[in-house]
Image (tube, rainbow, N blue to C red; front, side, top):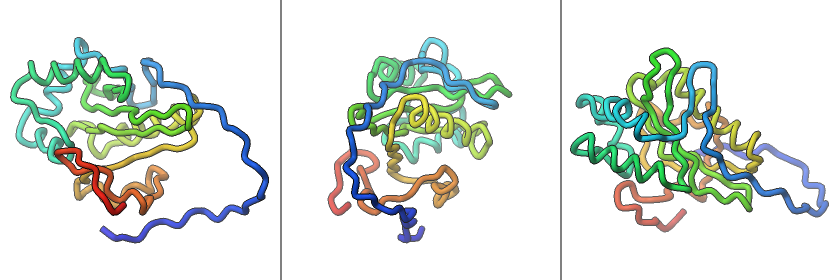
Length: 199
């Protein structure tokens, strides 16, 4: 992966004072409907079995946990307990991703590190089961979250930190309109969440 970063679009600075911007709104736990997928507020009663199968069904499904700071779980009951903790959280706010085609929840994503007063929010905790990986639905899920945060909720800055990235996803950030910020190269250590110096 290259250390080259995109340059910011050149904008003329007017010198006019910047007035206070309105705060963003806290995301409500409501479904977000797309053409090929539906983002549903995480509900373990509804989603646990399908998400467990998508993320623990076989050795290939378990590989998604290689790139996340948590998981996998030894059994469905412990995964369900983890989902219950996530569903009860005010930050992050998790959504199950359900493709219209299969009708099965097979991914998870969240709004996190929410600073509504400053208009800053992050998308994180993202994982896609094999059925969703490299599909139009996966792209649409992230697009819907971006559009909802920036358009409906009034956020001005979106963060998307990554801990480790699967090789097949490296360099795909521009596809989502993401500009890499060299000051935040590594936000956290992958497994123990220790903040790293030298950003």
